[in-house]
Length: 269
Image 1 (cartoon, rainbow, N blue to C red):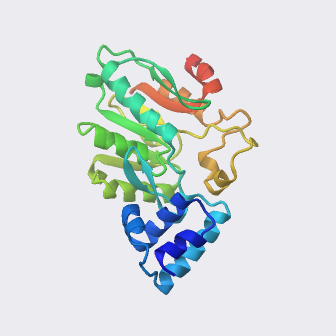
Image 2 (image 1 turned 30 degrees about the vertical axis):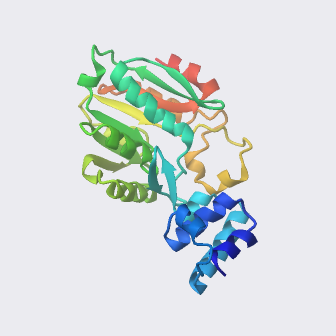
């Protein structure tokens, strides 16, 4: 089987086939398209067939290829972590704006999904008062790592309850050469930073989908603990906001949540 035959015989959209072949052959999509005559080895053909079956069964393409683009960079992913989504790129943008403009905002980043920024301890200049950012529930590490690359003068702490997820996050930090700038800690909510006494900004994309809500089939391949949070989807994010407000060193929040959840979360005192 050559590349042209693989592209014709596959039952998936052409773009997905190109991505699979790119991963299997270790070349970019432009190379794939310009080498239709290239013969796949038996090992590559077997891997291609296995990958097709996995995708046809609904498994996300990112888990099959082992990577996902986020904020213009490639991140390692596996079944231990949530696949980074475009909506969370909005969390990055809002964090950067919050640090520079000092403005509290609620912004829709996808249909029915918002990110909001909020002061907890009012500062005249939050940018000069804060040089540490804490990412709760870091998963793949895409939030902390992206912010570390965008904010070279800041320090970072990234936490997760899953040690398997922390392994992925560390691998991504090493890949992007920021491992020495991010301290990874294991634990739930703010427990890993109970003793932190320097002013910090908390950022997080916590689970916020109500239990039992219908989701697309491919979402069922992702870790449920990173997605679902009780009857109203608030079982993770409400305690997180409360804990942040009770932490003397937490000067602000930037979080992702459902649009209908934002008003009640912003009203918490």
